Amino acid sequence: MNDLERENRWVLDLVQAMVGAVSSNVRRVGIQLDNEGIRIQFILERDTEEDREEIEDILFEFEALQNGPVAVEASVLIHAGDLQAIALYPRVVYGRRE
View (cartoon, rainbow, N blue to C red):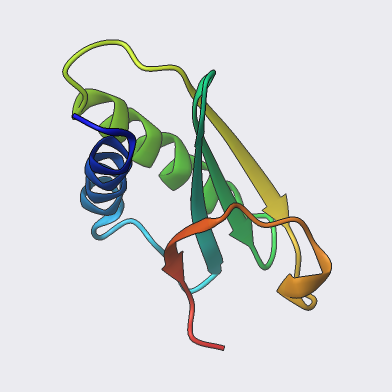
């Protein structure tokens, strides 16, 4: 499997893990692949315990969909301003309509 096929598979796995778990507070979810593994970025408008728990569940479901161990690093950014003002991961998996 080439890099693009692997990336596409991980994007689909992340979409599947997010089904029913994304609240209106989630502004964007991005993914980036590098030699170290998979990095997933969640951008929330405001910090809530409920969304933090949902993100943990999403990551658990994502890892469960993998055939074996995969290095996953997740970050959560709280940002209510212009998204162009911050560093974003290149592949958008979810973007809230704004």
